[in-house]
Image (cartoon, rainbow, N blue to C red; front, side, top):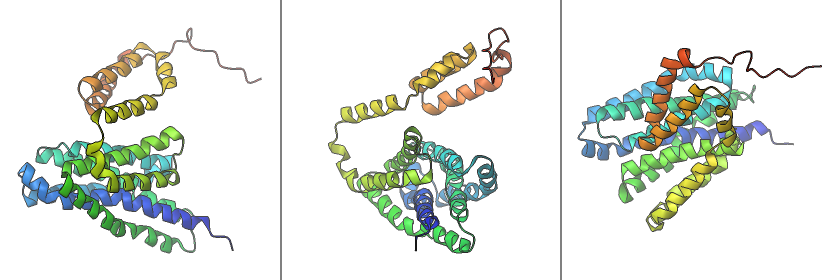
Amino acid sequence: MRFFYGWWLVGFAWILYGFGAAPGYYSWSFFSPEIIDELDLTRAQTGAVFGLFTFMFNSIAPVTGLAIARWGTRRVMVVGNLFTAPGCWLLSGAGSLWECLVYFGILVGAGIGLSTIVPCQALATSWFTKYRARAVAAVLTAGGMAGVLVTWFDRVMVQEYSWRTGWQIIAVLSLARTATNIKCGGMTPLAGILKCWLKLAMAFFLAAYLDLVPMACIAGILAYVALNMVKWDEIKQVHKMNRFHIFLMYQTAVVVLLKDFLSGVLLAIILYALLNRFFDKPESPETAQPEASTT
């Protein structure tokens, strides 16, 4: 008798849910003593941060369901990871309570809510009718079981490095999986499973050897990766648009280089919202390309 493919997807959803939700859910509590000491916070304040995270994680579920129905599970999970990764990275540099509330409570909470529990349940239920409840229950066991490995990882980070390094690794793993999947064309959850396991194993077992790698080598690798992620065809396509879009593209690139990624993107969004009605003119009939004949 042939093994039903849906059970393989349940296993994949188990991995995605466990290692997508557990790092954020368990790491904050594990890192809290160090965060309290370094940022001079109280337990009540760190509890408020986690409370906001839990609120965002749960309250965004209706939005996630509507988004899945409209755009599909894959796109919603990618967007969730793009919330989680910047949130974790910014959290690693947090120096005050409000930064923890915004970066972890809002960004990471919304990102995990978009990329884990609802999409993974949808992935499991879409293949089952008779054993639907059993499939969903199997997926939901991942949170606690994966938490065992996550807390071990957190302990290593605290003992050997710091809580800031731990959040940076969580951010890079989340963003790298999404970026690699999109770049390679493997945009389904199944395509990221082996990458997820490989990167987790590298983080767990090779972190102690990072100090042996020269900084110049790391900089070269990052430059190579960044260059390969540039889509030159899209840049050429922007140059064929009006000057307003060309300006926004180069403005974002310059601000990202001089300031940071978040400032460049936010400034571009604000400028577009304020100025698009004045400068984003539609293509005139004289300059528009003629449509191809259907005959």
